[in-house]
Image 1 (cartoon, rainbow, N blue to C red):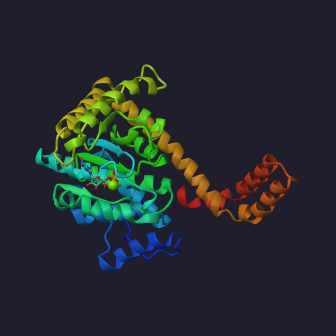
Image 2: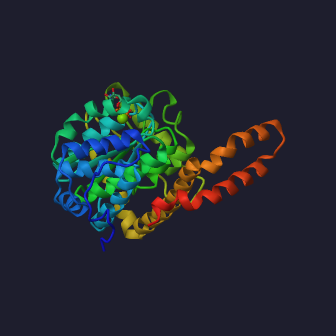
Image 3: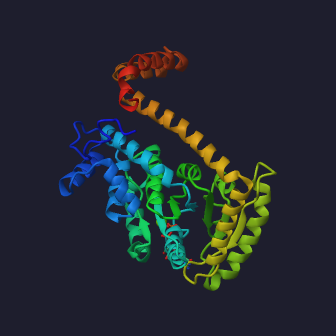
Length: 370
Ligand SMILES: Nc1nc2c(ncn2[C@@H]2O[C@H](COP(=O)(O)OP(=O)(O)O)[C@@H](O)[C@H]2O)c(=O)[nH]1
Ligand SMILES: [Mg+2]
């Protein structure tokens, strides 16, 4: 089965070209500080649950270097049959809603119950701010210290497509390594939610009661995606307020969904500080998963996710190839100017760009199709 020179070759050879400096450097650093090993050996170590090798495998799938992508594909092909059994939960909510604190509190609870918890993130903004990673490190300190948890900050390789791919593939790795709950935190600003919804079984929205926060800043689309909603920080003087907000939101959910037959999201309250409501929330997540399994929807949901993912990959690859195309680069500036001045219609210009791109395709996509 493993017939490719890269498959049985050694990992982390120095990249010949550095298409993405930071990615290439990370893996190259890994090469100098660690012994090279074959992809089969790496997969074995991941399956044994070696934390060091799980981290190394994730670094590999985060890389966008074509050589690393090829090795990643082999690694994932070996690991995929061992993945897929975990409970996958996406966690969304506006910044400050308490996602990271919740994951820390819930994660520790799940570990006490005997689960092994992987925490991943999709945060395409983390490249710019770096803030959320630092925040998560301190907020999830206790959880991260546990042997039964694996906490990995969002990859910072740039655009959402790349970040989402890395997170999805990291999930295969942690699941194959025996982590039976995957919690994926997202930033709560839109597109990354869609990406997370495309890879989890249960989508949990964390919201707040105060000052109309529960609807402000949350796009209707995100509410529609939610399987479960919790009004968080239901503690101290805000507990009653949170309960009332949850009741209102439960009523509002009836009106929000554009599909009247779609199951309505359950609305609960929770506090990561007192721990109140966390058990109920986990029960709701488990019940949702059980219902998906019983109705056969889990399989169809995951199949649909795979198909959406397939076309996202095709689109992403085409877009990347388009950006690399020299022929497109050569004519784009002039065409843009002509469209702006009115000499050329956008339709004519797009035809010219696509024709130029079509001539370049055979060389641009070669690396991905062997
Ligand atoms: N009172 C209260 N504060 C909380 C709770 N959860 C989080 N916080 C606080 O809210 C702030 C934002 O939390 P964080 O987990 O970083 O939010 P995130 O941006 O959604 O990940 C922090 O100061 C937390 O200490 C909670 O359940 N109750
Ligand atoms: Mg956070």
